[in-house]
Image (cartoon, rainbow, N blue to C red):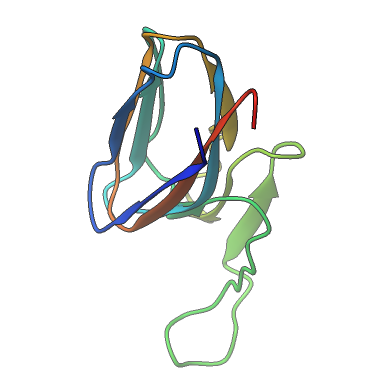
Length: 123
């Protein structure tokens, strides 16, 4: 089976029925109301997340004004979520950008725009 791309404007979902393991790679996911990811009976939520993904370019600023330092850029670890939080929030949240699913397991997310690739183990 070839790779499958999930792109859209809200709430992606996928059930692995390939007969093999698959890798879910989140290239981009955004939301104005936080992001929640569910997979294989597990749930992770980042209520303050603006965008997550692999290889994101990120700018901390205030609209069209001069860039400001009132926010912080948080990088939890390699292949984890990156998000901007206001000075009053200072919370630690992390979401995975790559997960594995066994045959029969499902993935879904509460988010807005997204681009996700599903890669079968056998290629």
